[in-house]
Image (cartoon, rainbow, N blue to C red; front, side):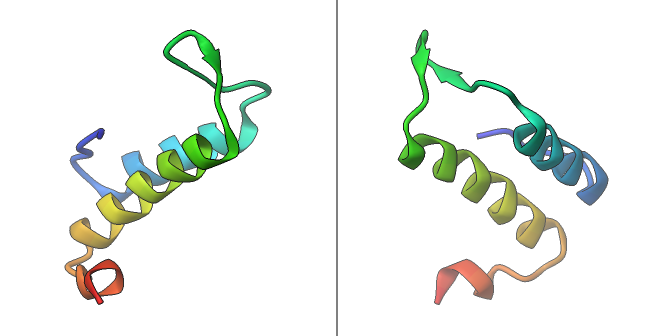
Length: 58
């Protein structure tokens, strides 16, 4: 998981995922579940940076 220093970096990474024409993991086209996990990692990091861990810990 990427650890971002600030919310701007985490959001920029999420926007890059949205704009990607193709996403690969381990040399193969990413599955829907893998892409969802990438987004979830970004959202968890943003929540951490904002002090809102309860959003994903509940």
